[in-house]
Image 1 (cartoon, rainbow, N blue to C red):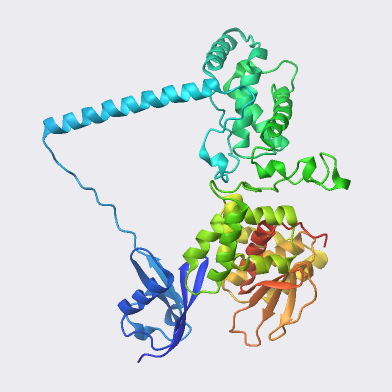
Image 2 (cartoon, rainbow, N blue to C red):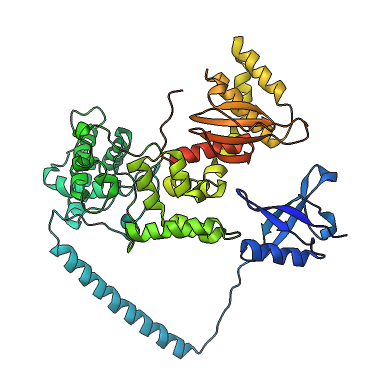
Length: 497
C-alpha cells in the first residue's frame, strides 16, 4: 500500500538530496524513476537501488515500490551503455575524391596557419610575454607533475643542444651554453608558470635536474649535482618573469604589488600572499569577457537561485562562473565568516565545497580523502596500538567509546587515534555535545559531535567556524574532510590552538 514519504536520494557519492513526496509513493518503479529524473535533472538511463535490512543493509535493485517506506535511502545507479559503431559504405571513386579534397583543404589551412603564426611570432619583441594557450587566461587545470617535462626550445637552440649532447657522449666535453641562456630560461619560466607562479626550491630543483638529464651537455663543473647553478638561475628568472606579467591582468601577481599594500607593509617580502600547498588556482583572473560588475550580477542572481528547490545544476554553473570573484574576495578582503556566508550561501553545502576544492587544487576532496583513509586505516590502527603510557589509555578509551563496526565509525576511530598518537589534543578539533544542545561557545574552528541517546541512531556532527555553524548533520569523517575543503575555500589560516 502506498504512503506519503520523504526519501533520501544518493545521486553521486557526495551529492545526497532529499525527495519530498507529499501525496503518495508512486505505485510503480517507473513512475518513481520519472519523478527522480525530473526533480534532480538526472541525465541518461539509471536504476534505483535500496537497502535491504535482511541482508545487512546491502543495496538491491528496486523492482517494486512496495519494498520502500518513509525515510529510506535510494541510490541512483547510472546505466552505461556500450558504444555503438556504425559503418557507412560508399562508392570507392567518390569516397577517394572526397578524401583527396579534404586533405588538400586541410593542407591549405595548415599552411595558412603556419604563416600567420610565424608572422605574429616574429613581430613580437623580446619583452612581450606570449602565453601559449587559452588556459593561461583562465584557471589552471593541472597540478605540478611528478616528472617535469622539459619543453622544446627554439629551433636553433635545439640544434646546438643536440650537437652538444653528441659531443658530450663522445669525449665528455661540456657545451658553452651562455648564448643559449635567454631562450632556455624564458621557455622554462613560461612552462613553470603554467603550473605555479611561485615555485618552491624543490620544484626548481626538479626542473634543473630534468634539464641536465635530458641535455647532459648543460651539466656544470664544480656543482655537487651538476645543476645547482641552473636552479639559482631559474629562481631569479622566475622573479623577472613575474615582474613582466605583473600589471597585465594576472591577479595572483598584482595582489603582491607594493601599490596594493598598506603603508606599514611597503616592503616586497612583507605579507606576501602565495598559494599554500597543493593550491593550483590561488587567485585566477576573471573568465574572458567577464568583469567585476558582470560577476557581481551573477552573484546576486545566485542568491535568488539558492532559495529555489531542485536547481542544483544552475547553482553549480553560477558557482563555477563566479569562482574568480569569490577567490579575490577571500584573499584580498578576508571578510568575517557571517558576512561571507550571507554573500555566498551556496558555498556552504557539501557538494559545493567539494567542487570549490577541486577548482582550487584539481583534486576530488572527499573521494581522495576517504579512499586514502580506508587504504591506511588498518596500518594506522596497528601503529597506534604500539603506543604506551597515557596515550595508550586514551586510545583504548576511544576504541571502547566507538564500538560500532560501520565504515564511518572505523574512520572516526582512526582519525581520533591518530590525533592522540601525534601528541595532539582531541579537544582542539572535536567537542562532544548532548543531543538537543544547540549552544556552543565562540569556537575558532571545531567539529561539534552529537551522540544520540539511542545507540541505534547515527552520530551526527556540525562544523563551527568563528562561532557559526556552517555545515551540519554529517558524520565525523565527512566533517573532517569538508573542514579541509573549507580551509582552502575560505583561505583560512591554521589557528594557533
